[in-house]
Length: 272
Image 1 (cartoon, rainbow, N blue to C red):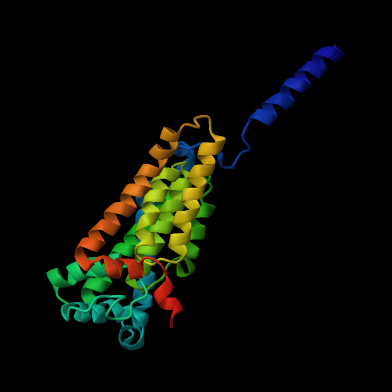
Image 2: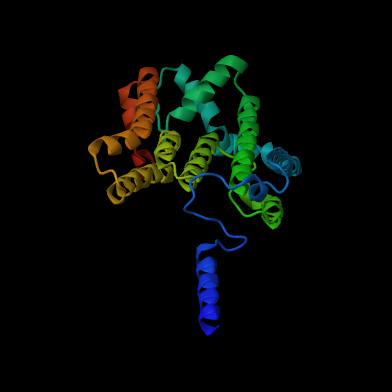
């Protein structure tokens, strides 16, 4: 009888050790959590609730959105001023000072060409930024435990989580870094490497450092993994390498190689 009791006790201990604790995230799983654990309110409701919270904060912050100081004297209107310089055939980073990347310049130049110069196309980009970040927090909540406190925590922290009136280049940086880290959580460092390239050619600072760290992460995962062939490493680096080459090639075709070279590293800002 004591032997049976000890056997049952040992079996119970083994069961406890192998079972995942209630309310924890199993970080070794690369896929999303089961639907019953990941969606206490549903993805659609979560997204629209977060987006509505962002919109309410923007309405309450309307003096910041239309601040004369930000638009005229500070960075909020810098791409509008730069677009006039482009019409004068001045090259950013070569003929005129510019410390950001060239991807936001190209995007907003196309928007100005299609919808006219002004702050309305730039504010439309801000609305897209709100929706993209609401999607990020929705997907992140899907990775957290089923307790609804996480949802209410995100709603309560909206004034801290959201940059109400962001400078457009940093919209691309926040988007690329946020989704790159989310992809790392999903176990897709190869895709994270590609997404981080968007931030690296938008503001070559912290996002550029993230791109380098993701490259290092891919190499480390390749070394500690089971497949040590060179083909496996190249296969994981291809998405990011293609993204960088395509973006830099597009910017070179539009602006020329000298502006691209000047905007590739944060050296312009270091001179001033």
